[in-house]
Length: 231
Image 1 (cartoon, rainbow, N blue to C red):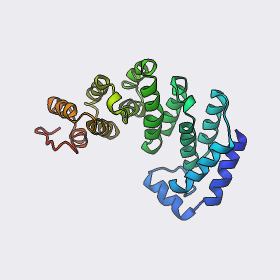
Image 2 (image 1 turned 135 degrees about the horizontal axis):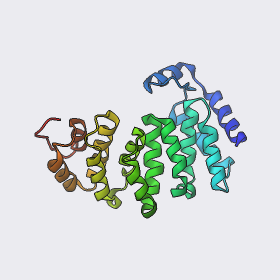
Image 3 (image 1 turned 180 degrees about the vertical axis):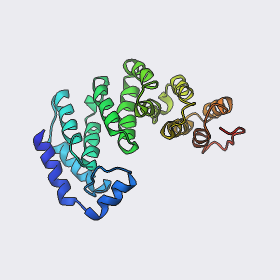
Image 4 (image 1 turned 120 degrees about the vertical axis):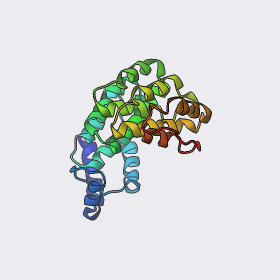
């Protein structure tokens, strides 16, 4: 794993652009340093990682992810998440403790949302009987980013969405004043509305008095639906 970290850091240092690094950190409202490498320039490095490094066990998969995750630059954390996504055979319920760690330590939308949707969400979709109860606990977790994950991990499930759980989760968090939770409710409902617009419309009409203005507005964005009350 040391070789993997060294490889990534060598590639990133060669592409580093100090002129972009500070604006990128300012945009993310973080003091964590950036190399100043934008996503299109990082993608070829991710492909090199996949061709050069093979993980034969879950322990190697986890060690590689954490090896990158624990480095000081933001792009190294992005690389850790992308590495986690590239190895689907390990994106299973057994990896949820690892993903939970990334969410709690990441604690900002640019890190959390990718883990929530593309890792936790993948596990929920493909291993629902083993994962649904875990997500039920997460929706009431003391950590806000875990609660956000329990909401947005439904995104992308389309016709396989557990509608009952999705709607229940939105209502259980509807009274929160936290921006990232209110936004997550609206985002998740808006995405599901692309698959089931009538059901989401009915949900919004029935529960509009409980939903914040932000949640309702985001959810109804493509439904041509205006709310009658203000929260």
